[in-house]
Image 1 (cartoon, rainbow, N blue to C red):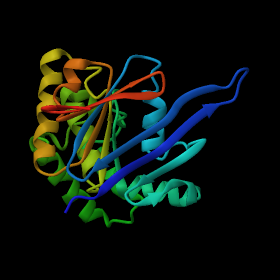
Image 2: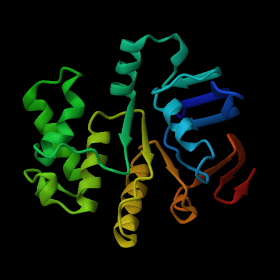
Image 3: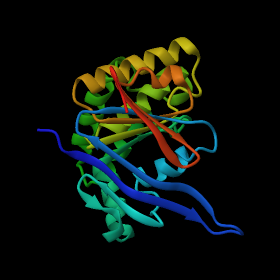
Image 4: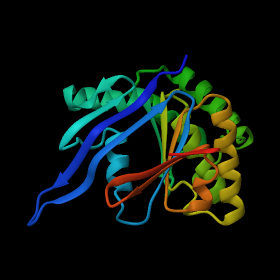
Length: 231
């Protein structure tokens, strides 16, 4: 049964200044389990601010943000960290892999703070690597991998904890066109298997891969498009 994984209700994020800067202005957005949503907008549109709120990395000035059913405003730093660790997976443009660790060790780091035993961490990391097509590369370090392979490792790390929601921030930004298309194909497969995804991008071609597209400009959602439907 589908349920809201992410809910933003009348969300405002304003930064102090003279005058204050309103980066987000009454944003409303709901993402259901199993959805794949692309948030698209130009530089300065509010995408990064929105990502920080969706990832429980920042708090709204006003309005409500619920992640996996939890209102972030009611959580202290420890509980916010636990929410990020258990309910969210992150994929970034720059991979953020530790050069000194092998691929599977990088993936397994996502389980360390959950208290998962070492043997189970290795097994789950290896399974996640296989899921993204890199089961044969688990012992390689990032310097021995291509950019596309590094991003697959980062995706495996995001998936290994079986989060309610995966947030991907410009995940193809450091990749060539062909490799970027392969990564988008992987996201399509993962979503087909039930992974809930929100992808942040400035690229219309990348956004077109997602069944649902939300357009943001000047801190406001200006359009929401579902394949075959525009609203």
